[in-house]
Image (cartoon, rainbow, N blue to C red; front, side, top):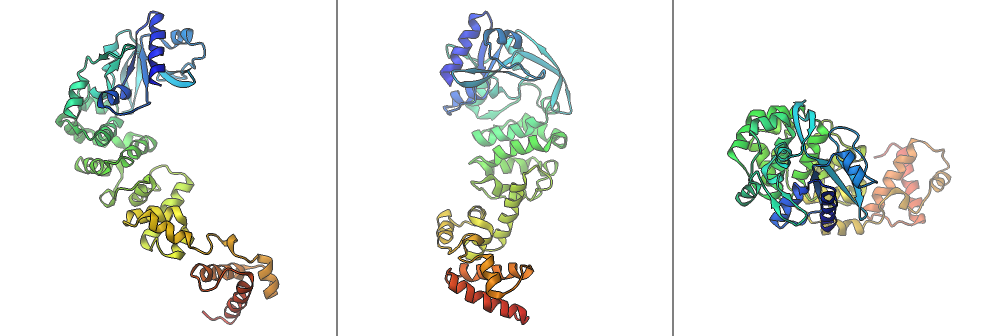
Length: 370
């Protein structure tokens, strides 16, 4: 991918324009971190890029990048630009194409993300991003407070980069966050969740949580349970501890998983009935949060006689015919009793044993016995 990107730069330059790899890839390259997230910036306008690469997809709005497919790889190419008049503490209302690389770099967030590489792999760094890389420091390019006022999501991006890279926030950045953190309430929950996912998904999560707490971001981010969070290899486990299902956007399946994880945490992920009711995944996640190994949970789960109701060696017709009854609420009650007996190994999962158990269960129900 890197070699293909360098060829794109060469192709653009052949047509008389400037072109560079910029941002995260160059930062990671200098840090010795493998990355395939390559962004290209150029003096060519989208229409001029279209003339060079016939299959280029032009942006649908003024903020968009041109997407091209080169060597079967998608690349996004953005024209040098200057931005002004930010709206809603997130996006600029004015975008003007320019011809100077440094003008484009000055609109970006942090110095470490404004380092460029040309087609010969030479590093272009007019804003001294490499200095902050060596110092392991997160610094904004422009005045920090103004930078966060322009785009409040940069507050979480600063914490995300400091977390993932194990860097520190500069004193100016920390002070600016304290002054502008209230603006996070203006940012969409989708965007905040995306950044938080990357913080929570980092092996350095505890550093990220500490920064959020130390800077007093729990309230604007609505993360009241942050102090209870423990590292977890599954991000859904972290969100389950935060209990913000009705605040942040989650799919129906994610909400179900979080609810199940919380229930398992109150029970025992090694209990056969808990495993049967909530399934392997939820019990593994809850087990990790409780310090129980995945191997232990898997071992108990693998020994369950059944993993779902349909595994029972008896059908609804068998039950109805045996008891000479019509289908109704009592049927579900019988099934639940059968499941419990089989999962707890009180009877074996054979048709004859299940039929005998049905008769006993139904007799107790009809006599009102517990």
